[in-house]
Length: 481
Image (cartoon, rainbow, N blue to C red; front, side, top):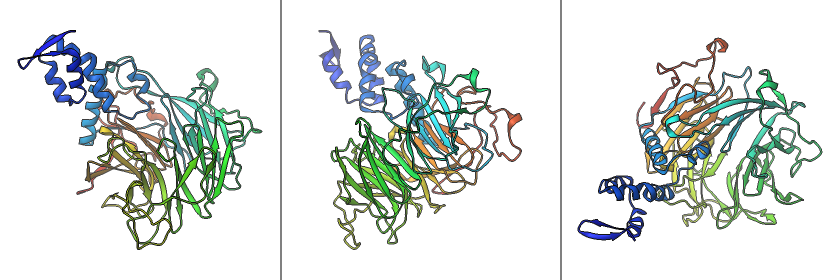
């Protein structure tokens, strides 16, 4: 056993490794300065232990991080966390504006970003960077696939299938839900034209409903669908007979969320009703028809809930899966903890509604919240896409009064319909185009698709910064304009 003399004491190396498990970045750096052997010990064990206890949720960095050393991963996280704290990022549109106004939605895996708009799925490939010095992992435009029957896509989510990250469930405006495999794009076949996407029409996935599929969400092998009229269906994708159960919420419905990793698996539904946010229990064989929790608004008058997601992993209340974040029509973003006993006894409902434990608002805007997502710097941020002017609002749950907002590139007069927040990137989409806000280091001109100026519409308000790869955007602090 190797021993090290520190502070007059002789410590075995395995004891030092145990000590490292609870050290901060500054402590690990100071420890690495003591001697060459301890420096090697920190690089071999210390940084990997730090990463184990400081997880950064990220899809698009997964492939790249596998080839980075533990130290390089920590270095990247520190740089991006610092940018989040300072609200410094590179804004990039991922395409020029579409010719018509659309209501798109995005989905993200470790290797693919999908933008579903109209009857077309636009595919972006996430590359692998062999080292941090090569720059941030690139996002390359592969091409697009169109449904030949011109049915409009209203929802999309990735589903597990043979460890493939190109299998999705797609919901349409006519109520159909299909499992679709996206083939790898071949440039020589495209000629810059959308390719026809072949699917088996005789094998619909799960429940066939009579109105549009408003929402699709997936957790483990369970797929949850929600129609605009309130029909919710639960499908077990590992079963030969996928439909498990269906219930009717009997109200206009907007959003859904499923979590099978909670101690009590549940689904949450956002609706327009006296109880806009309700939680139903899930068993392996059924979806409960009655809610076990009603999550109440901070205001007396009920509003609709348009977005639901899980809480930031590094929030002060811990990483419990029983905490959910929701976006409301009245402009509030609310955090509810289903473990809480703080109930609103003055409001009708069974069970008694739970009050939110935290509420975020942009004081300069009361626009409805269309989308919510969590993650970001130190895995502690909440992001909300608002209903107008392509505004995305951000709050750090550790400092909830110090929020800020930014207009997406192009400043479209549009809601941010869909939003995905990860460790160093924010992907979103408006009625005109998808975009990204990148807080990480190593962004270059080649990191994202190049947009030729010659094809840019004269009505497009995109403006490139002097650095040649970031685009000008307007941002403001919530404390002052």
